[in-house]
Image 1: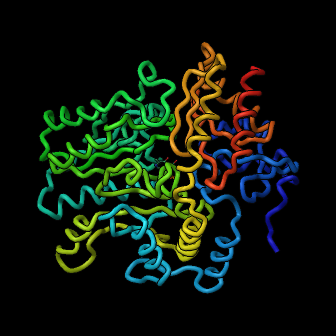
Image 2: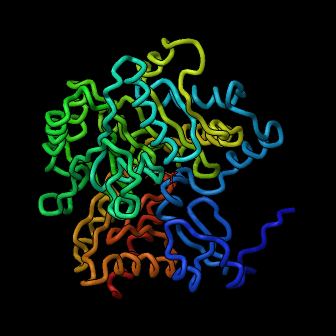
Image 3: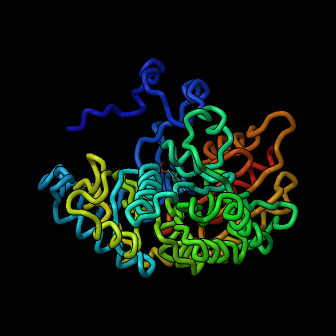
Length: 444
Ligand SMILES: Cc1ncc(COP(=O)(O)O)c(C=O)c1O
């Protein structure tokens, strides 16, 4: 028997103790949106309304909700081995999941370090980058390079290489030292209403050369970018941009890290954005879709060269890093069942077959007066709206709230509506999403 109370039975005072993350708590508690259950493409609210999930939870439920194969695998694992320490000990499912991941990873990324979230994956990748240069005798390479408008989670490493103003304002004194930022690539003036990758902006990667000229390559450890930035409003890489970054990193011995926490596991139409865009990073951070969102898990895929470098060091612990729950048995079981489901249902490439339909449906919103940009790739959408004067974010929030009332969950980030539905979505559901957005925007 579960001792979780039905959410319909929660009173106003029951809502008080919990401090909700990335939420306007007072506003939320005055008008809570409570989810009670989920299945396939849908949530059901505590008051019984069906909500179409246009965002895969938070870009994570790629195979749709409450998939029996995954929940059964997790339950079975918990009955068999609920927990095992991951320091100087291990269990078979962790190795199996690492092997399965390596099979679908871009060639050459053939080792995995497990974490519990995207934020931990990012901090782990940054730590590996610094440690890698040190063990190979290039310990002066300590500088990290991120990008404006990047989101790399909430750890001190992630917010330091990230480019989100509110993080930098609040925690400026605690940001790690020796970090530079490339310019972001968002260029509405030249790229608005691009279909797929924007045409203009590849030359922005040259800014990396400027930073190399300033600091000297011998001081730079790594560059980290999201191939597609999601949290700051769906920013797509200009054509050729990622290739240029790779070339410059290669020229100067700088590691290139792709943060694929949202782009991993089929979102772009390939298993990973690295494959979709034809650029191989040295490390790749993962989370979210790794377990279809049902058990927290993240990981860092690492190149053979990096792993081998550590294995040539002195005997003993090669990387002084890890989490109590690295490779947790339940998460590994979820991951294995998830990857099997992706494979069986062809979900890692399904976005490619729906991308044109998605794109056409999205760009049909272009005639609405509030719409200043529509940008799309695979099953990703950024719908940028004209802000209401003096009330930044208000229009986006209003659209989010009205869509939810009309039975569609969208995500708002500032003035951008960001969509990333489960990859099992069908065309009539795509129509429902865009019809709802049209109705809501028309009514504004
Ligand atoms: C690109 C990227 N990196 C890292 C993270 C952080 O992941 P988590 O919330 O699992 O810590 C996110 C979360 O949305 C993300 O989009």
